[in-house]
Length: 558
Ligand SMILES: *Cc1c(COP(=O)(O)O)cnc(C)c1O
Ligand SMILES: [Zn+2]
Image (tube, rainbow, N blue to C red; front, side, top):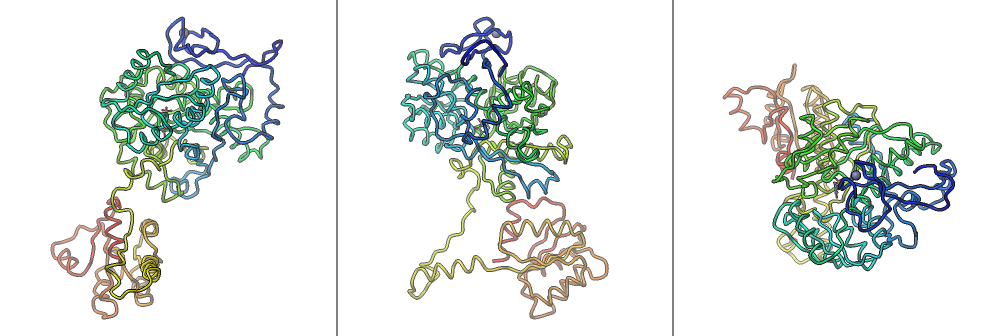
């Protein structure tokens, strides 16, 4: 937004990010007429008093269009809206504490009308196209853009042809179809799908939203910067000023999110609403990480990946094109980092986020959080940094691919109940069984290790945990509580694990209690034999407590 006097009303132009040629906003622009650059940025010229504008904002509805002065629409009656934007900025407690971060915020873009931050792009793009009189449109997408476009096109009465690469989850294609889009599945990569969609559009003379798409995407994504600055202002400055975070993190594919957010903070900085530019943290899937690879080599141009190898379809853009250069330049100027995360790290992060902060996300967001974990571990992100992570999409359409098979407990009442009783009663008693609190005694001289085991068990099962940090205290707890399970270390001063086990096996009241041994000790053959006879499970200390292991542990309780 520039201060520009002497002109009434508002004027919108597109500026080439490469040679800075300016052209009027028009649907037929597919790139810079001078140099062919595909990324154009919107520029707004109008008279504005910033103090007055921010004061006025306080009375506007909390949604994306509250910032309509800086969005590429002339006439507000053309806005196609489903109430997008204005998503909460959720302060993380448990996850933040586990990571040792003081100010971790989650921008909850799952709460958009179709469940991802592509709703922002869709509302801006479809409104702009409606204003320009477009009534049929082709889009290529790995899922979320097409779903969002399909919903907004339905509202605007625009016919949509949605091209998907075949690896897109069926649930996502089906959702686009539900909104009335023509769904076309291409057996090939995302980049090939884009090419085919473009050819199809040319052949049929249908509008392909290429140029406008990048304008709409950038302008739409920048509203996240406006919202975050306003929300952090409320959090840190009592609403008196706006504020930038130290970091904005996002999983990237095409890169429009961080480019838009970067532009947003730039605009806010230029008019003095914020006093710093945030660093950008961009995370890619290891199997498709052309930006990360180029960044590691210190290169400003990325080498496309022609054969992405990741289950995270949303992040499968093999050729980032000019977007990477923009992001690279941003990082050079204002700081930031590119890092990758494997699919395994991603799925693990999804579970961690769900279990700590109660937020269930789509795989791409897991990648963002897996990247956050690494950046914290590597000291790139500091404990005092104010960090905002774009929680860019909801898990709902793809939930089946995240949890695998073992996610529900089934009670077959027909087998369990020998005498016919009211089904409700049977169900109730079955549920009581699930809810029964299990008592566990953990004996472990390292309190942190004990707490870790406690946390994991609590996340999986209804348990009451008693912790002893030495063997004698542990034995006391066992006699006192007669727990449902004992988890013990072997090597402890005075009363060690072997003594505890022997005592339990000698007492008829305690001999049936399952025992799990967690040890760092190299066991002799004799010790191993003895333990194999006496204990139910032997865990090597320091080995990651993965899901199968935890499942086995919990299984021993039932
Ligand atoms: C599109 C998308 C991304 C990647 O966004 P870009 O900024 O275009 O790279 C990440 N997460 C989700 C859920 C998305 O839909
Ligand atoms: Zn140009």
